[in-house]
Image (cartoon, rainbow, N blue to C red; front, side):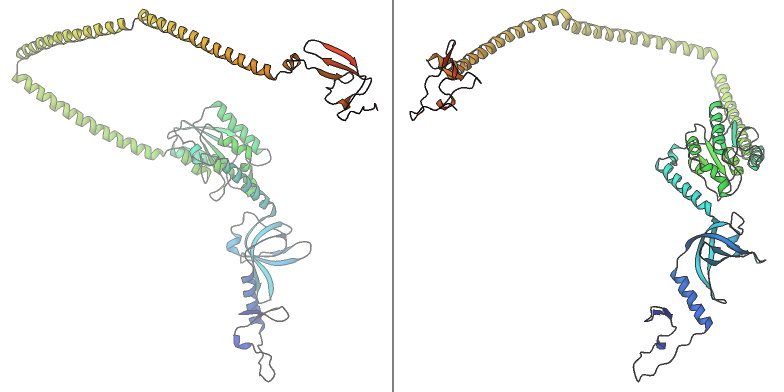
Length: 480
């Protein structure tokens, strides 16, 4: 059991009775730790307080005893910590660590009790650069998967019996030799065409794309195998190129990806039509098993022989039956029977022809009557009469509409005449305008003596000068 004391430090006890309240007069006893017990409980606290961690640093003081374990220090510019990598985990490494290597660890925190040293127990180790490669791999994988390039619906089926198989790989690599060995053993009838390309280095993705494009242009193979043998994660990263992945996904020829070993996965594996764990397995996927084909052909041959025997036996039996019937009935009698049968058929045929001709004649007469009823001249006459009727209706409608519009216009003119200012002028009224700004004079205060005004009459205008002005009070306003 662990608790925190008043000073804030972690204290561990094995029995709750070890605690005693500091009460005056109450007896207390000391809980004395041995070093072993202290280190043991510290180890439990450390291992229970930290999950698996990712830690990055530089290897130093590397030691590799005969036990197969690795012991080293992991340091940065300010601190270091001891690390232990046991043999079972060391066997899974893809590289040989050395002093000065920058690495990324997946480890758990522990305490080495005999010395009381805090250390990391390493579960996984990789070069520090691999972490960025893996992140780029995961990002590209998620991107292409979101675009649907991994969907099984868009993948092409492999041909059952390919005539030619294309191999895109390094001509000097072990992958090509493994593929050829398997093809010679399984299906020697298939031809093999090699499209050489580098499978490692900065120029490799471009060469792989060019080889794939060459195969698509020449159209001489039924299936393509692209890949290489095993290698480090940096070596296999060539097949994580986005442009190469899109070229494989767009291929019109089925593509089998065979990169590295069974545990290796690349982007090319996901976009290819099939993924093989090794180049040898790719050759097996691309071809049928020749031995199985031979056995199948032998089975088909046996079945064909048995079927021919059954057919011959049945034909022989039928021939014997016909021969027996021929012996029971003479050919001349059979000929007479056939002649009589032919005469009966001829009479029935003549009757059928006459009946068909009569039916066709009645149908023809009926069609002629319908044609006469639907003659264009008759329909034209009907349409012409209908057109004349519609024309008369249109004229009447137009006249009624014009009359209604005329009456409405006259009514509106009368209404307009009532409110028209011209009608007011006709009754003897006039409109006075100021000479300068042409404003209508509505009040005597708008003009003064001597102002020029225009007077609008019902017919014509007058120009006048104001001689006197009187308002409602009889006063004359003065000019300002």
